Picture 1 (tube, rainbow, N blue to C red):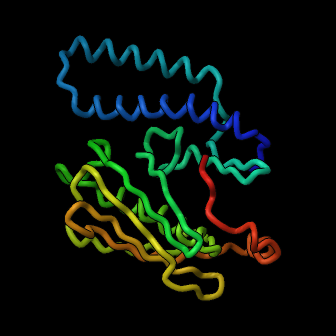
Picture 2: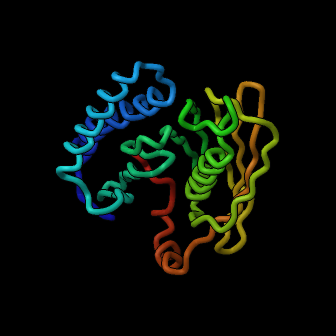
Length: 218
């Protein structure tokens, strides 16, 4: 979606909505781990419901999507992995280079638990799907996920983690990317993904190769 918004306005919105989403992430963690008295829980519920009602007075009709301005600044603020405004997202801040690499350091807390004290396997897949896709885009070979193959080498503990991905090879409109999640002791999860450039996007990419590259999330 094209939306002509100057960099200064994007910065203002980032400073406004980013802390709001972070406060909701902290709320989710607090709800999971609280041992407050019953009366306190009921009061908190009423307060949360009141805030939710206030925020729903004016809202988008649908999802946030991805928005671009003429300067190429992209905002995927509703994204489940990197979304600035999405409290479900950790969110990851992803770095790229134009060789087809992407990487991020991040932390997963109680909201991402599967087995006790460990990251849910589906969350690992979610993160690596995003990283592999961003690596493909960074190398000028964007696409949508065709397949994603996971190998869970060992359990991933909640806490500080590192994820990275790179392009492995390109076959026509298919880009093969590989990536990992690691903790302080090494790799815990490996993934390989195939990213396919949709037919409706092929002509544009062929005609405008200089425009292909990683989205700059502001």
